[in-house]
Image (tube, rainbow, N blue to C red):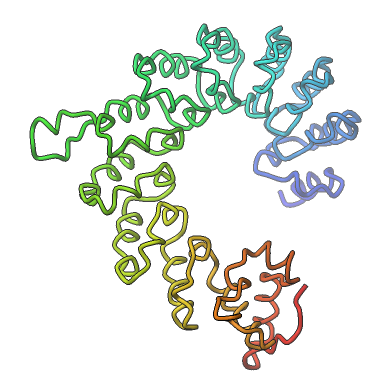
Length: 373
């Protein structure tokens, strides 16, 4: 058994990157024939030789590579290893479709089309909705995540006639399934105690109006409900945080962030929706670091997104090189300069600086009295 396994590996001619479980299911003869195919060594098919190729038989691969239209320039983006998720019949029918000559459909020619079958692709391209400008934004290659039936049901929803829901018609909608789309659109304020309020649509409440954007998609209906039902939103001091970026965060994380003590300690100007784009640990570590250096009054919205380890390395670098934290009673701008700015303006590469310090800290604090470029 081990000898047979070794023979199969030798047949790869050193291409061990092609090994996966399916590879060992192939015979030595089939492996040898596939590896000997000249088409896979040349443009435009050389990118197709990957571990995915073992999803197909030698005959299937040979037939796919014989499809003349695959050499057409408009199909060049389709020539990736994901093509082996499909089959010869499916591939030949898809590339033969006359719809690809239409400008509006050309952007759909991406590798994830091979996650769909011909029947779904054909059905989707012939939908009447593409004649309606309201659906222009949803016509993207993300659509191949869904079946024709799923797409049809989503686009047929009567809610799209309501102007407040139209901003949701973006390419991100295909990150959600039909059930979640429906339940999010129909969501009621069922967490309320008052029966009248319970029956009210969440989206009729002006407090939540800014959240109706395409960034809501990809979140489960449970997550959306848990965020919207947080009691904090009844308090006006928190309502300004209800911006689309909130959908990138989790309910428990949101609750912890808005209840941090920093916001009551004179840092209310930093209490914006930007906190939902940053990890809780990152916010806390930056505040504590700036407090340690006595510059916490100069934390900025940009600064709370910094990596604290990298900023500590910068501050130590400034100490070692006698670079003042203040100039003319103003904070030195280097402190809140982005990593890219530090490299471009000051020749300081923070990632290299951190690595350098780690290597030297084994023998005590590193002395960085030099410019890390």
